[in-house]
Length: 130
Image (cartoon, rainbow, N blue to C red; front, side):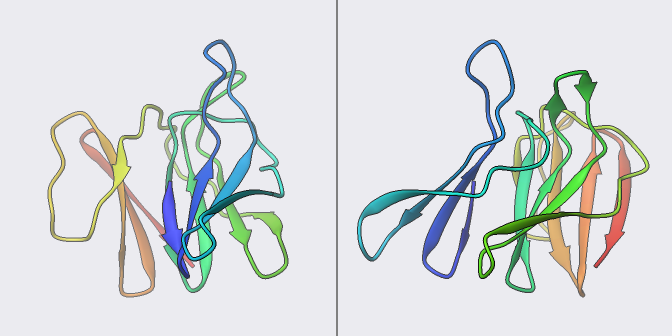
C-alpha cells in the first residue's frame, strides 16, 4: 500500500491461493473505499511507491513465480502502463522505505531518490530510471 494525495492505494495481494490484480483506494477525507483500474499483472508480495504523481508497483509474485515487472498507475486517468523491467526478479517484498533508512536482511525495499526509484532486493540493488 502507499499514499498519494490523501488517498491510500492498496494494490495486488492474494486470495490465499492466487495473486490478484485489484487496486482499491481509501479516500481519507471521505472515509470511503472505492475501486480503481486493475493492474495488468496479478501479483502478491510486491512493493508500491510514489514518484511524480504516479504509483509504481514493483516485483512480487505472479501466477508463474517471482516477477521483475514494473507497472505504473496514473490516478488522474485511472490507467496502468508498463514500466522498465528490473534486471532481477523479486518476491516477498516487505515495504517501501524512505531513502537512508535500512530494512532487515533478506527483504526487498524500494525508495525514491533524485528522480529514481531504488529497489534493494536481498543483497542486490537495481535502479529504475523514470
